[in-house]
Amino acid sequence: MKKELPYFYIGASYGGNQDWFSTFMMRLGGCGAETACEVCIYLDLYKGCSLYPFDKNNLTKADYVAFADVMKPYLHPRMSGIDRLSLYIDGFGAYLRDRGSAVMLSGVEGTEPVEVAAAALKSQLDSGLPVPFLCLNHHDPRFKDYEWHWFILNGYEERDGALWVKAVTYSMYEWLDFAALWASGRAKKGGLILLELPDNQEE
Image (cartoon, rainbow, N blue to C red; front, side):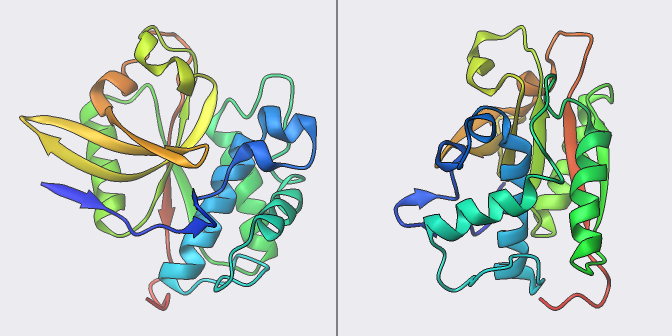
């Protein structure tokens, strides 16, 4: 079984790109803000929300960078990064409330069994909702590029009994083994963010 969400391009870029951001600190540590921007654009395009303060029908790099500056006060870079789901939920949740949105956020902590995380992930994607994911330090060198990083999961595929997920970051995507990604082997865990749309949300 395979599920991939529709997404968006900005020019030739698959989604946005943290490297575009206007300040050094945002380019270095703005991945949390980036994923929130991506979610907002996605929800505007495909769920009829009103979370992106620019023209969703004409996505441009300049507007995306300006949007990141809008999101920065809510999910600003800090010394240890946005290294807890609660920081992300509090920050992005404040942005959603300020936009008058009833979208709710919750988290699945990295301490949960992989079966719990996989079921929540598949349920979200089956509902047409992207999943922000936080990876902290990881023992597996395959995930070196994803360490201490927020990124988007917007697809899954079951392959010979294993779950693979489509990870989106830096204008690209890659398919990752979800069980291996979840099993960081470190005491401090990341996790994933779940979205809940109001029942009357326009599709």
